[in-house]
Image (cartoon, rainbow, N blue to C red; front, side, top):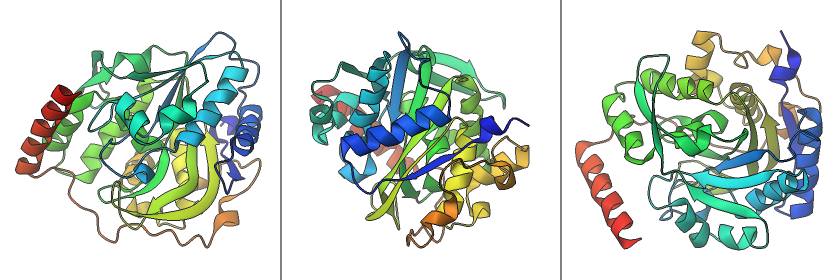
Length: 311
C-alpha cells in the first residue's frame, strides 16, 4: 500500500478570506505533491454548479474558487473553470451568484461542458461525458459539502457526476435509478476516466438538514483535500459524524474494496476528523428514491429547453 495515495489533508478555515484559502491551498500543494509541477499545464477546476435557479449556498462559493484559481495561476498553470449544471450554463451560474465577479481580474476562462464523448463504463453502462473534462492535464474537483436527499451527502465522489453531459444525467436517473446501489456503481465507474485528479472541498459554510438545493447553512470551517476522492469522502463522513454505512456511495466503494474506503488506511498529515466533531451537521433521516417521477422528468426537459432558448 502507498500511504501517499490515501493522504487526506484537513485544515481549519472559518472565512472565505482569499489569503487564508490560498495559504491552505499552499499546504495542500505541499502535502499532495503539486508545487512546482504545474507550469504550462491546463488545470480544470470543476466546482459544484448545480443550478442558476437555486440558492447560492448550493454552489461552491465563488471566493473559494477564485482563491484556488489564483494559487494555480501562481504555479504557472493555465486555469479553466467548468461544469455542466442541471439547469442553466456554467456562465449563468457564475453571473447569478457573484462567481464571475470573484474571478474578475484573474486569467481564468469559464467554460460550459458542451462537447459530448461516449464512454462505456466498467459496469457496461454507456454515458455521454464532457470532452472538456477529459482533455485537461489536471482535473481539480471543488465540491461543496451538502446534505443530499437521495445520497445522504454530496462531496468529492458525487461531484464527479457533473462530468456527465446535460440531459444524460436525467436519463441515468430514469434508466438506472431502481436502486441507490446501482446508481452509485455508475458514479464510482466515472472516477477511472480521470486518472490525473485532485479534490479540494469547500467545507467552510456548508448545507445541512436537506439538500442539495433546500438545506440550511452551517459554519463547518473546514477545507479538505486528497488525490483520492473515495478517501476524501471516507474521511469527511467521519468528520461529520455520519454513519458511513448510510452512504450509498461509500457502501458501494467498500463492497468493491476500493482504495480509500477503509478508514484505517487513511493518513492525516495535519488535522484529523475528530478535531471537527460537534459541528451539528444533520443529514436526511430517510433517503429518497433515485429515479425521478416521470412528470418531474418531463418538466425538467421542458425547463432545460426553455432555459436554453432564453439564453
